Image (cartoon, rainbow, N blue to C red; front, top):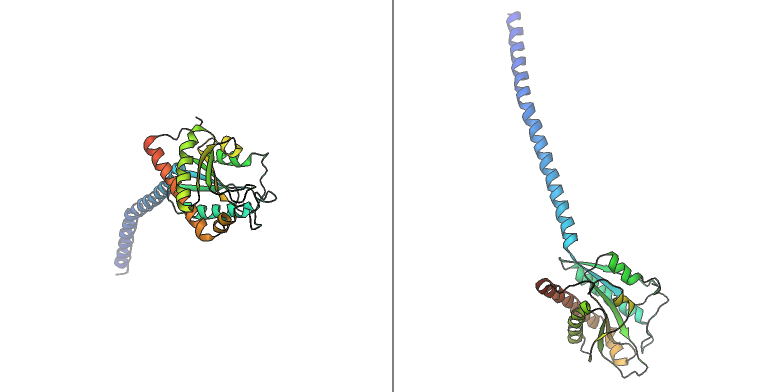
Length: 245
């Protein structure tokens, strides 16, 4: 009896060993397959994220002046640099909500940027931006002068300037002073379509009092974003985004 029980136990042990050896390769293959799927998913996600960044429409916003460069002094004694930064930050937030857009700022605080360094256009060029928008408030010795105007330099920027001017005038309600070609380094030294918007005259008391309000700045910021989107749509359809022309 003792001998038979031992044989029985040995037989059961051999059966369990056989079953284990049969199941083990299946478990290993399953684990490897799962890891492979996870790795593939990770690679796919990484590829998608990279693709989104590569195909995003890159916008560089340039808040004019900053730091010891105050810009114009408004009728109420406030500086242009604070107006340009406030409006630019509103634009930045709105553009960040656009899935096809990627936004960059030449400055995000009251930092001084030397004109001699040509940092602003270099920053846009180094980021391979699709468009460049410089935000300013105008000034003149006669406080009755008012209105909105947009400057460009290269021929491939004219269409972009026209679209932005149209949208800002509609949103701001100031006199339409049109677009003008002017040799300003921020629009001259950029490789992409670039425009400098003089939103209104800070030296005009009526213009400035409106320009300093959140409501006005939000409307103008939204109008510039709409202008950028319109330009992108038109350039996609017509293919007139010709850098370097």
